[in-house]
Image 1 (cartoon, helix red, strand yellow):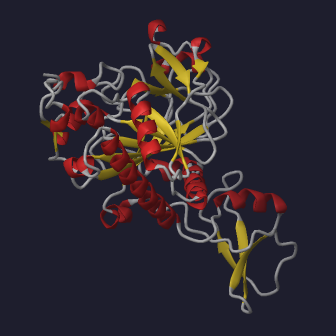
Image 2 (image 1 turned 90 degrees about the horizontal axis):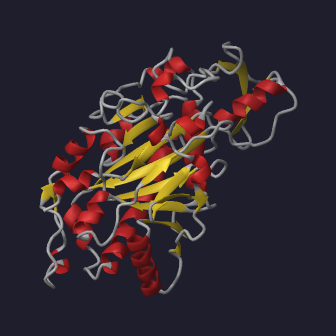
Length: 403
């Protein structure tokens, strides 16, 4: 490997040796079938009792489900995905300014999972952001690509006589800077980007987002996803027969992280993973899938099943902390990401995490009928430290906390 990250623009013809899994650990893609009965829960349903019953069934039988009519706007989702694509299309030297393999960093670009611990790497780059509280973390978020605005979607046909030249701080073609011109229309205060060639215009449009800056877009996405997460935690609490706010009260002031995952085309996808089978160490994961390329697989009844993306839906994964709180009644889902030979894939995972000093233990009402507590008490900080000290695909970390 000539670079620290995969998103370098290099197209590999063979899988580098450091990514090749032992034969017994390979994904066996031919044996994977489609999960045809993925629970899809309509949060817009007026019958709350029905929603709670569906969530109970999904958490017990699958450990994950998809939600529609979830309250996160389509515009927010589309802009978030565009920002994700924009970032990984940055020149390599710009991305590498953010590179770190230190898991304690609250903002970093990295690769694989934990490159300092693992023996075999994973075919994945990711941008990791902490997202709560926003006022604390937004200032450290990437500021590149710059926040261009496009208030007109039409391609200009003629150069304006009244224009000023600006230089785009992104290498658009042949590693050369391309000059564009900006024209202001005083009558309506709108702006158009005017370029000298149609080809440059088409290339530049991928870097343009109407409205807010990229940090604003990601901030809005984080707020809406957090609200969805809280709503789901209330429903999950009630599905366990607990008070609506039980889970939120135990978890305390929850942290929120985001992983923007990039899986480039892989020359030999049958030999490696984007991420191997694992459970999530947090409480709840809200996953935005790439609609163009499938890659998420879940383990059910000992078999790996492909979860195809559904328009306008999020995948919700039960994490280790909710498995512990439910005394094992709900399962933290084993899942993995596989890669594609011809197409890149992206996803945006948002993680709601307990406060570091939150004391995690089986809910008392779930052990009052003589059922013993499966797990001992532990703090989230203790659990998270143990999780990052291991390889991702080792045994379930929660096994270390059993009574």
